[in-house]
Length: 319
Image (cartoon, rainbow, N blue to C red; front, top):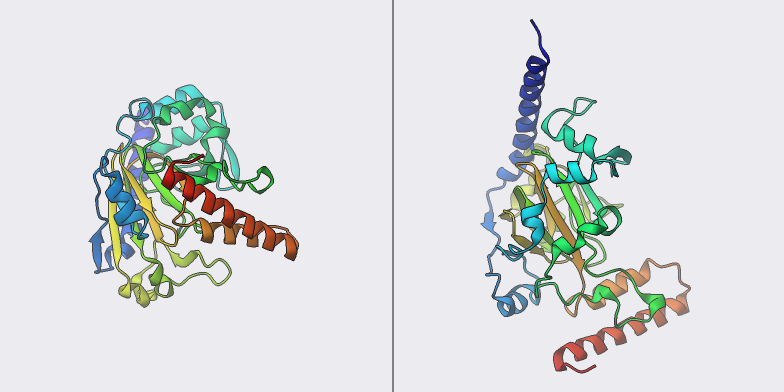
């Protein structure tokens, strides 16, 4: 006799098989690259070392336990979000879904037979604003974020500091492409629940990563491709890291990265601008605005002066 439990067990076996196959495919092409190094680790309390040896030099760093004291580490889980916010809508692959339905499918197959999608590029202040206090205190590694716009005229403010986005995905999910972040922004990925594997590639590897001519920050290499079809990948050096709850990784601007969730994962990410990338960031930002030629020149100069004043204020403690 076929019971509901039998069907559910059967579905779980099928889902597990598909999940494991997807992880193998995603890992295969990365594991085929022989040049591998671990992402350097810096202690959470070694802030000066992080600033001088990594951020100023544009090098990535893994910071274990840097947010171990965040309330979210103990509070957030799939069950928590399903019970507390299950009736809220999220956008997944361009379609609206109830959060409870999405999380319910994180232990089975989606309706179309594929594994569940990856919740990303979703601002916490828009979807779960009441949860922002759970992401405190702000570590000194990203406390000074010039995206707060406090040093910029209101009409030229470009973004919002500490504008955390949530990343939530089942085992086997990943960001769709190997890519680097736009606008010359640094990024932090901060793990809250589960584990996340990240492989980084230096900016000078771009020519080996088959960038998309129309969107050069994205690689045309499918995450489950065969390396034989993309032989230049053999020239790439990968920097690998695995994040556990409380860990963060610093990804400098221009660094390519690929992400795999080996188990159900909840993380947050944020972008950062400061004196190490302000010139590049504002130049890029102005170039994308619908300004006339004169206004673009003026805006760029104003933003550069604002950056100089902010750097002076932080260095000398004035203002």
